[in-house]
Length: 449
Image (cartoon, rainbow, N blue to C red; front, side, top):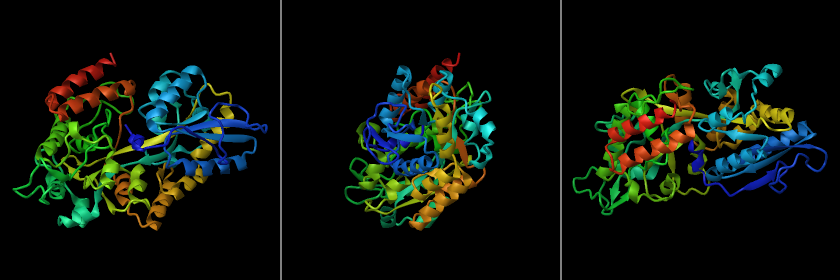
């Protein structure tokens, strides 16, 4: 799944668009006769951009107030589910492709297609594939707000010290048999307590100071932050069709080969063991100098380039695998609660969130890439103005055949823990990867019977 969830957000935070603290209780009236639209999101880094959007929206719509609530990922979906059950859900919330099918199946989402047609909204203006993700049975359950792709993130100083040619990182290769040139760089970047790298015959894998690669294992059934990209580069496809397929293929040997390669990295001492891995997120470990490389989503760029980060990080394109270069493409959307008493006001806000005016404002903050093609270019310009080279992310979208869509199906929230547990059991060495994945594939497909 898209772990923008790895952002360590603050606890529940409620703010009005005018930056005045308010209570978190729902209210239809802002106290001055305006209708209040409650809007939820989870990313604290994006909060300032959407506050700016809300201020502009309120100025153009003086009869509507927008109340923004930001909650960290781990509590976001639990809180939302609770509010839906109690009939007090927010009017509008940021939605994610793994979660929205269950809300649509429960008739909790307003079909936006009639509003799109009535107001003549051009959904072709968004990056390819983003708008279609939110359509099922001719009903549209969200309007695209942003997108993200994956790339290799690396500590430039660490790689330079080991003699790695940074200019060659965009041309790395990978395969599950010997890891290609990517594994050679990972080995060179791994350093033991005596300063020997992983290519040194005397390298001590039991006393590693810096791991060459930090993998992500809390990655659900999609592996967006790690194995999913490599498996796709090995020719793996998640299911029979996407979106809305009904038969998963987790028993594909190409996925097992990929997972086994990760286990091989651990056995060589190039990546930390899962049972000894810190609970601290990979981003923080990289910044702390515990690893030299990992994968990063474009939504985490500012975590590596912010003014408080003392080390220098760079981004490189995903390595080329047997099936080519692959990067997961994920996009979020804003959805309207079907039970809202303010459908027109909520639609106005969602339409504005998906507009060039709002998405250009978001682009200027340089935190995410907006869904509109025109706004994407402005976000890229904002990064370049800050001296950040993020083309590894934008080139993935601009190159045919590189991106693939993460699975969108029924039972997504049930499938995620099943597959994650199976993959972790293989990484821990408790089961053979092929056996674990064959077993879980049967369980997953049993959900569709």
